Amino acid sequence: MRRWWVRGLGRYLLTHPGSVAVVLRAAWRLRRAHWWRHPPFLPLAAKEYWDFRLTTVNGRNGDLDPAGVVAVAKWSERQRVGG
Image (cartoon, rainbow, N blue to C red; front, top):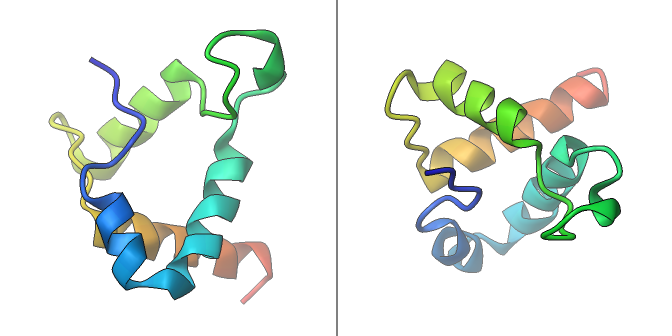
């Protein structure tokens, strides 16, 4: 089963509101091309890419924790701006 939402991420972002924009920007960069043409009409990552990223991050189980998601999003942001 593919899961595009990390359990506990919403609660984590409510308690760490400064991380919301960083996570949203990272999610926007991962969206699949022409997402508006196919159901569910949401800017989500492609299934194959999401499965690949889950495997490369945590091995077989692919479980992500909210703090890890935020840490990777912040790292990605720093890489993007060159620092």
